Image (cartoon, rainbow, N blue to C red; front, side, top):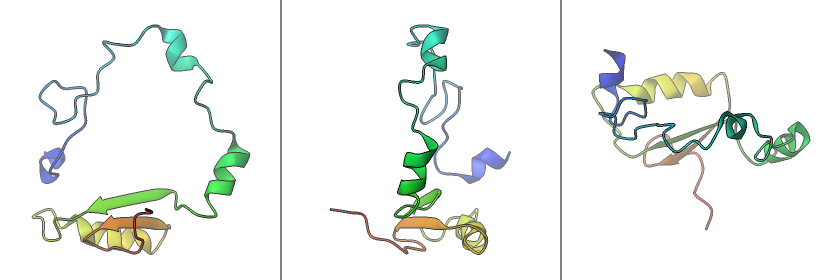
Length: 93
């Protein structure tokens, strides 16, 4: 029931707005591959510019009141917020 509070869903269901599927997965090795692994040292360099979480929201009065949740979350962890709601950072050119 909670998923209905959000505008878009990304699940393995074909009824999802953004269905996540493994039908094009070449092999299990692709899942285990280190090809796209970003070393921790590189991630730590990015942390100097980017928060560990991103929030992009432009519908500022949804029935779920998710902005209140994110506002509370921002008190405990750094969040880069783009869009119209709770914006604390502009998108780079």
